[in-house]
View 1 (cartoon, rainbow, N blue to C red):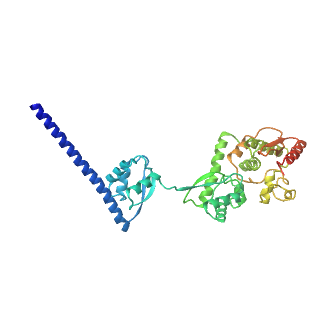
View 2: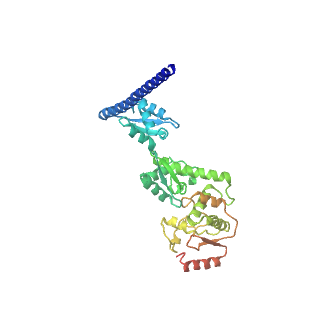
Length: 358
């Protein structure tokens, strides 16, 4: 009898607890729905008045609760709890991204969550400057990618606002003195960066690369200054298509300088002409310019183009040999090297017959 009464009482208690649980679940669900409804009503009201776009910074490692608290404190949402419950119900609690945002205070939960899922808007853009461009071409490339006027970029570069440890003769007022000093690379540029800041980034990059390389290796004995280092690198850049040939081209330049020979590089003539041509003619070789290495001994006064790390490394790694001549002998870009002029002429005739060179 007592046992039956105990079971009856226990069953009754279970029913009561279940009903109480259901009651609180209904209240919680109702409150959650009411909060979402209130948020929507608040949003509707804000659509009419007092709409603001607010700056929000979400720190790395912020939890869903932290983010909901921040948005509530800033007035972007009407209920921290309701937004946090929304994130949990959509399985988004660990998918929101840190960063700086601009968020309107009239958005629904789904719209806010979508913004935080995408992450903060990009505040940089990419520009790419390839190796081998003259300073004028480099500035034109920067202009086309950034929207900055070419003439304004020139003025910025020669105004003295851009600083370089390597500018030729320490005179930044001449555009040619900046040849080769805007390091070719791909850069992430701040959206609000001006022309001077972009140019300074490129100048600084050359200095970083040079410092790193010269911490590993010293300048070769036949290179007397940074300007000569960069000038030879620009010649190697202009003349070499394959990486394996770069140090060998550098060796030919070195050997000709040591033998007091004209280095006779076509790319210097094109630079003097400021013309891009597939073939240098005999008449072109007559141009009276200190950049014409068919007329003047030694290196040109400055680099003749932008150059990359591969060409700088080639100069540092210049091998010892007796090569004085090189020629493109294969359509793949491969070059051949020799110390004998007759052999050079024979290679040249063969390359013409095979259509490798004009």
